[in-house]
Amino acid sequence: MKVNTVALTVFILFFVLVTVVGFLAARWRRADDALHLDEWGLGGRSFGTWVTWFLLGGDLYTAYTFIAVPAAVYGAGAAGFFAVPYTIIAYPLVFLFLPRLWSVARVRGYVTPADFVRGRYGSRGLSLAVAVTGILATMPYIALQLVGIQAVLDTLGVGGGAHSNWFVKDLPLFLAFAVLAAYTYSSGLRAPALIAFVKDVLVYLVIIVAVIYLPMRLGGYGHIFDLAGQKFATLNPKTHKPVGSMVTAPSAQWGYATLALGSALALFMYPHTVTGVLAAKSRGTVRRNMAILPAYSLMLGLLALLGFLAIAAGVGKGVAGFNPQLAVPQLFAKLFPDWFTGVAFAAIGIGALVPAAIMSIAAANLFTRNIYKEFVRPDATPAQETKVAKLVSLLVKVGALVFVLGMDKQLAINMQLLGGIWILQTFVSIVAGLFTRWFHRWALLAGWAVGMVYGTWKAYGLSSPATKHFGGSSATIPVIGEIGYVGLTAFVLNLLVAAVLTVVLRAAGAPEGKDETSPSDYSAEEGDPELENAPQPVVAH
Image (cartoon, rainbow, N blue to C red; front, side, top):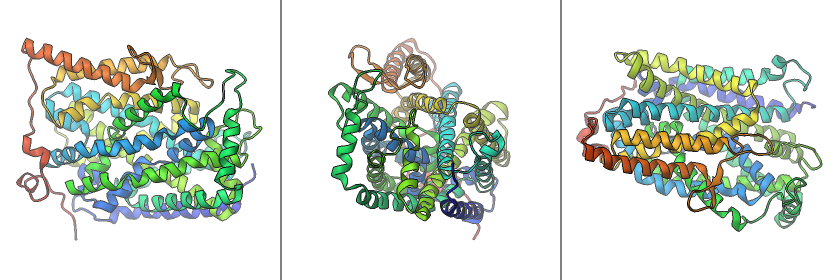
């Protein structure tokens, strides 16, 4: 593929900009004691409303979102819009419990959700289950960010041709990875927090320009929707059914609704989203962000429209086996001026760096606090914790890079879908624990295990044209008989098992773990004695 020199130059300029910002972030609000996990892994718990808003936006709305949501609309139509209602559902739900999580974590010095589970239930096993689930669910998510960068690099025409040796072909991705690893190691969470400003401004700019400028070139939205409708009415030669639809069919509505609800419940169970929340400086900051983050859902709806625009622009038309994930990059390359194509690709590329950095930090925090310190070196000092977390963040990114380069990218997508099923199984232990101590720790662990096994088993049995196993996330719901999201079915089984076994274990007098929290911890505000006595990061002036 021919290299687009102008677009590549603009892309590189923005990449250099965010690299400089990433390294300078180490000097931003520098602490006297930088070798503390609160500092490296949570930015000193000092981020205000706008920094947190950009950080969480950069964390939730990733490069893969930029690629995958329009790709789903391009390939199937209305079903691809499920991401819009699920983010709308999510914020009112998490508004109820995230402020409580922030308060108890700030009072008790918790860095991860597994720290909270350990303190609430006095269970090392349950804490380990939550930590391992978080790490496993995060790894393929990081890999998909690298897939997003790779899609952009392929469209730019860099990295050599298909017949180049593997090193030349993947050299640009190696360089991007090396830069990401270096500034994350150096600056911790402060780096993605600052870079998120650049990323989100670019994303908003590109999407607003795209949904106004591109339809003018394609004959208006009426014409675009007509062409999309014609494409979706085409029969699949293998199934003899339409390839998609402009409106979700009645038979698919259970699947659509359960996937949206299950995804909403899972969204703030991911370690990287919890990390963004715990980095906020106050309970009020968390509440305000839950109120203003839905602005990103509006952006997501506009982003989904790009799938229809790609159809109208003829992207992939007549190309056998066309990869829908290239729909947006090729749409931009085809219709934007070269210089703005570079801006758009920079938005996607930087949109991969920010969440990949936060995800690797979150996974490193989990390993350090809930595996290394809990089971390997209980007497580890804060400085030793920080050093281990830095090294683990590098290993996590290396693992994601090997995953992308050494395995089929479809496997990364399948594993990310499976990760969504898995992470949802931590919801009962975390969220229920923020409101009640009624559930027994052993019952919660059993419920988690049942949900994990059932979800994995059902997902393994799902096939698609691209893969024999883990080919989807929807299957028949027991008793109801409708097709629905496997993760939500597993979650219901998890909850039922936990509730029934709690009754049984309480009746049998099974020992309960020690709860180190107190009721006032969950509502602590700025100025309360609990927070006044909590460990305070010392910031240099």
